[in-house]
Image (tube, rainbow, N blue to C red):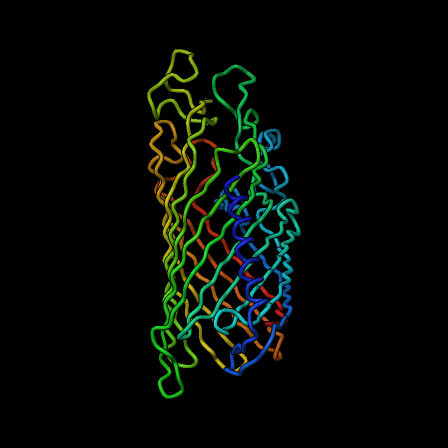
Length: 403
């Protein structure tokens, strides 16, 4: 697979850089306080946390109760199999290392491997692990170059429609005649970015600014029989950071993704009246909920603009607030792909977190967020009702040790 090959290439690149740094002539590196230190230093970091999410499967309010109490037809179809609750409490454990040493020209090189496990206390089938790697090289004038990679080997999204069986020969499909199967995928993302300083913040002149540009590649691969949902493509991002003074920072960000999918035949449940066609061959063109096999194309572009405000309320307490707005535009031109053809959706989300430094190496973080999505139509016209408007609330708390 392309994703595995590229991931191996990234790992080899990391190893080469690390190996070259290890055998280089011993030079000094500078820590965050400006002191010169020699040699390699390793600092472990652990984070434990819990999050409440009131809509983990991103369902509209009208269907959230169906997960816990499905109808007889939904039970027979497997629509909510292994989806125990629309809300959940997720416990997370993250373990990582900061490995710092002498890099190019004696500037600090930081290698950070990290592993996170998320345990869903209700819908345990959703529990998963995510591995991250980061390699960061400081450069001149307060800048840095970074390589990063992330992989989630297996993630259960939810159950998706794969077929329908007209058992009673009526020509229309009931809830019990639908067939849903588990949707599970592997997700890989990697890339790099470069940050450089525009203006240095000092005690005499506290205003500072920096700009970051990045790019990468994203790949999502579903298990059989959901290959039509695979997505892959390039990504790009930019961040403008403004230090208004020594206690207030503002970030403005932009993210872009161009994700391609291969048009693939899938089963849809559609209404004949929408197309004035007799799909089931019974001599009429007004039947509702008819089984149709059609090409589906989930290719899309997405753009996200956001901002964050970070305030040091006191030497021990920080407040971070943020907002972002995402727009997705789907490019399918398949005539019966009513779920994606002409589809546009927007998502808005806000978040706030307080971080309290309990000691030099222990921090308490607590916060929450709210998000909402709107489509440019009332519902998913493809009959599977897998895409819809939704709202979501999250609350979290955690302890961070190290770093």
